[in-house]
Length: 151
Image (tube, rainbow, N blue to C red; front, side):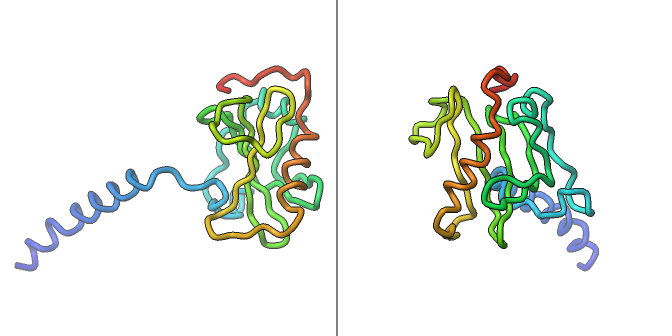
């Protein structure tokens, strides 16, 4: 009986966990651990040169307005560039999309780009956090950089 249990248990768990991962979808970018800076966590995601040029060379480790520290920048992926930020224990993301790609009105638009602010569900950002994070990324957008491929 024990051999039967061992023979089907592991493959069954792998199937169940794999199905759960597929149903839950990709993780929220703000849920990635701080170790993405090269300290033993998952490898950094792709950050295209034209996306880097659009954001004026913004990269992990930089600081933007409001003392937000850039944890990770990646994209374009799924038509967006994502900048993960951290400030006083709050982790958030600013997502840059081509204007009009989302049905929701963007809290900030700069030229042909809409910027959105994201935090983990149930998190209440402190006063001014949204404006400083969005503004800190908006000022980095280079007007004549062109539209990155994939956006």
